[in-house]
Length: 88
Image (tube, rainbow, N blue to C red; front, side, top):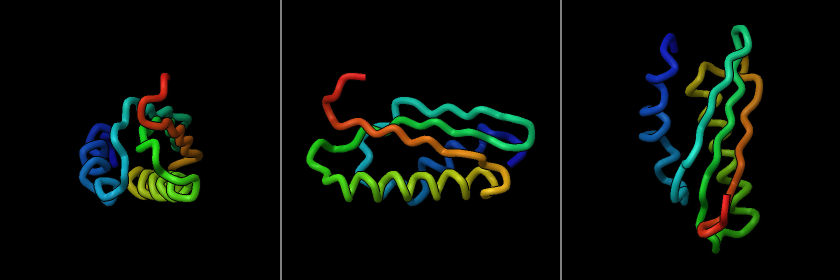
């Protein structure tokens, strides 16, 4: 995309909407030449298993890479998971 702001609404209305994500308190995109580094914080229900949380992380990474132009444009996606009620 030419405008980074355009993709944020796409991400919120994408397949991520079906995941058990309670909140996305922070998302940052860093540009380094033609590529991006994405840092995102997700709040998940406390009762999720580790396997379920890993699946959420995998899907979020895949979605963000696709939405930002593919693996050639996205150098890394860092997903930080927090359980519901955890302090920052």
